[in-house]
Length: 104
Image (cartoon, rainbow, N blue to C red; front, side, top):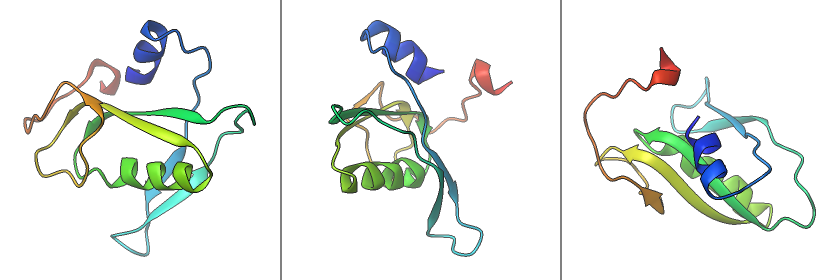
């Protein structure tokens, strides 16, 4: 939902998703289960997450995209102060439990 709202205001026409889950075998690893087919003319990616708790998923997705040759900018509505990463764009740190409308 945040990606769709942000893309609308930035007039970004193509929105897709990358699928990453924490690994069942290693608590510090992540498994990539889907990677979008991206245009070969595309070199810049806006990677959006609603909230960063540990930041691990966003961090892994950013690494995968950078290794594929993309310039990545990260965005999140909020991030926890103890997150591994701080997004490039956000409303700031927030350690409160937030229930977004799309999670109900």
